[in-house]
Length: 520
Ligand SMILES: NC(=O)c1ccc[n+]([C@@H]2O[C@H](COP(=O)([O-])OP(=O)(O)OC[C@H]3O[C@@H](n4cnc5c(N)ncnc54)[C@H](O)[C@@H]3O)[C@@H](O)[C@H]2O)c1
Ligand SMILES: O=C(O)CC[C@@H](O)C(=O)O
Image 1: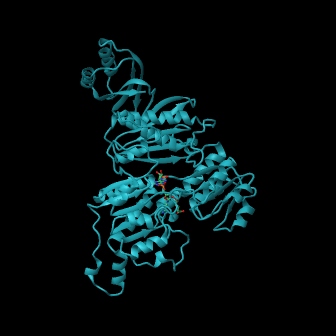
Image 2: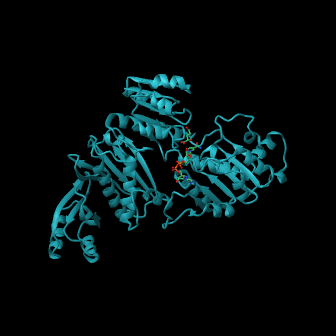
Image 3: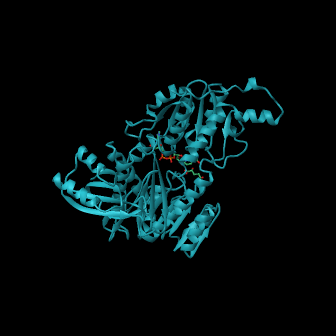
């Protein structure tokens, strides 16, 4: 197997590839001819944002099966050409969105408060505070162009600053009903109401050159523009004209029409344009994240055919060694249970262990988000659940490990108060195997009583008697222990108990607490 890496990856990610494959060719900023030579017999090519993989390269790589893009956008890959050849294009959405959103805020505040001028004044021995009056952002309106991963993070931060948040995104079809962060509005409304506009969308045929003289004229006088999406969304000469005429107050750019951008470029030289060299994703966490994530995805695909985070094939591959669909459903059941036990949590952690770690964990994350919300009786689908969670300030983090602690494949869903682990018995039958370190083997289906008790004789007997009196049949009962004075039980019952009976159970001797759970 031959892997060609065209841009420099973090050492940890490169090592992972080298441990796995005999032929790992590491190129750094190669010219096109060098890529063509090396990719002629390559099975996989991995790039970041620098190297362009065009149609010619793709058509001259007969063995190529997968293109990995360490990052979010796909502007440097001819995705259409790859799709036509049946080559999977994988990327790492989400991972660098926080770092990029934070940079957008840095550029926004820098431009609003004239930080470049202030720093230059200080370095030059000047102390003229009157010339440095800036814009206070709190109470102002921000307009976000592109309400995707980065746009939503920007929305959350600007909201926290005290700004009113608007967004324009023709492809976001729903208006959030649960704790909305941004109001989705038309482009015209956004431009006329916003004091700051932040571009967080990719370059597409529609967005290329979108911010031109005509659009700047529609922006409010004295407003700010920040671009962390794609450089070619903004026409730089028109931006300079809008600044020089005094129509715009300032701008912050992390992305440019041409990259690398030359020092002489007007936007780089302009006193009221804050520029950074495409460093949205340049934090240690994001760099390591995008590099290891893309390597995991490429390995997962080459070894097992897992497709996850695909730009051109967003499907769950069911013909793999691990029953991914089964694990997606299991993860959903764990999320539903955690939601019923801890509905007010603001933090969900999904941990995926074993070969499953190379599978479509995006689909597992979506399902966890969806089932968590559904259990709280909130409308959600696999597609919008993660956005809805985000809008409600509930984070969902993902951890992965090559091996499970007790089972070949394991899924864990945790909050600050609960940790639930599950597996598929015989890769087929869902089981909850651990609850807050109590080992158990419970079947997550139908109606279930879940209780903690002191481990004393008679507890099960008194529960059985009470349920018998109420004519409630027990279908299955599992006990869990962790080697201390307490135990748990998970009891599948044929009919749900009413609130009064649940109270009676809680009052039985040695019962600590009791919940009734529903699994769909
Ligand atoms: N500055 C950096 O270092 C850096 C880092 C990461 C990503 N990016 C870039 O930021 C962009 C967005 O990344 P993301 O991860 O948020 O992607 P995303 O796909 O999650 O979000 C992009 C959003 O833009 C919207 N959009 C598409 N066309 C639009 C239009 N005509 N008008 C308004 N919105 C439109 C999409 O519907 C989508 O919701 C990409 O171009 C990516 O390459 C830059
Ligand atoms: O390689 C980088 O750091 C920039 C990547 C960024 O533009 C992206 O689309 O993810």
